[in-house]
Image (cartoon, rainbow, N blue to C red; front, side, top):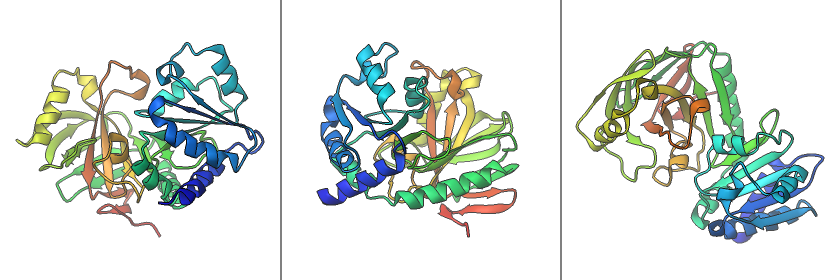
Length: 317
């Protein structure tokens, strides 16, 4: 993608995320993400006369003891743009929990190749599909999931929390993390039952034969298979206490520009895939705790008998 096109796409994303009244845009970047930050800065200058770019140690930025000058800058911003690697939604929420009026756009694991792919995505279409699926999930009672590799899952979602990870800030959402494009569903506790065929672990460079997980009342009871995926799952789950072997949530990828094999974050967003997260609930997550995200390919998903995905493709009218 040419630089002009990148600037245009970056400006569109900024415009979708900007505060309508407060036009202040402040960009924070680490040492290795300067080129991405410079591109965002140029795009931001097309939209606002009040733009600031700061490079700093991102470990300090995400710490609980930020310098007062940084706190003041964040407080004054309408939109804060953060570009760095390995940033999660939880990390962002913790960093900005005291800034309820500030909007946050984060560009994760940036380099020129990923910037080209993410900025060239049709974010309006991704947002439309993501929000449409999330709306259906939010009024559903039961979810069934099947895959060609052998997944057969059933769960209650009657009182579930549904999170639309869309590349736009609107309504109550105030954080956009790129790459975006997923619907996250936290099933009712202890209701997930069946077989789960995992094609590969998110972040893996190569795919293997699927491993089969037997799920009872939301917990992983058995891992079947003699392939690398099964062995990796056994190693990751072997020493965990029972509560850390439970199904926390599922996500349905909605990003048609994302592709497998680039990063853990991108694997979770790919249109045509579904991801299962095994560990403990997010509110108990700590830096010492490990969780596992595993990918299922070509899922067919039904909500109360209504087909939402068929073998990985959207089946909505």
